[in-house]
Length: 154
Image (cartoon, rainbow, N blue to C red; front, side, top):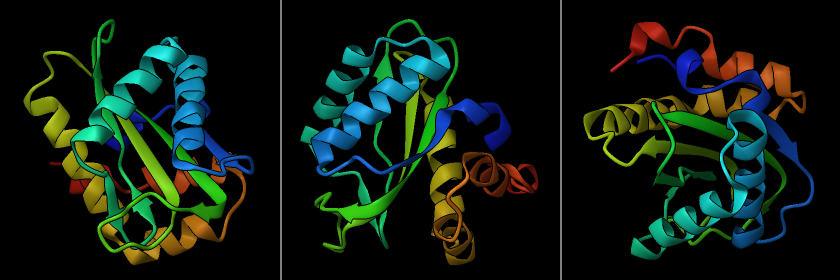
């Protein structure tokens, strides 16, 4: 599994407008619609339903919201960097400024788990997170996320 296959360059964005967890989920839905043709409302509903099972804020300012959706053939992702951290009810109670959302087919099974593990492992690297936080250009963020990740693939 490779982040280049999970994340299109057009699915990476710097957000200045997210003021709440719900607003961030809406923005992720809009980004998934623009990049992958998914229905924004369906994405939002699925993310909120998954979040109701337990928060996906994993700590250190990072959230990994994810959901299963009809109409997908493979796992895809969307990445946002927030200019102002927001409360995300993360496990460490720290606000979130990095969110990498994954969207998987309803029957994805192991593929979804491998993608989640890859993204989690990537964003646990504090050097990568520091580079992401130091950049405001979507193309640069995509490059930081996808360069050299295939050798660490799950």
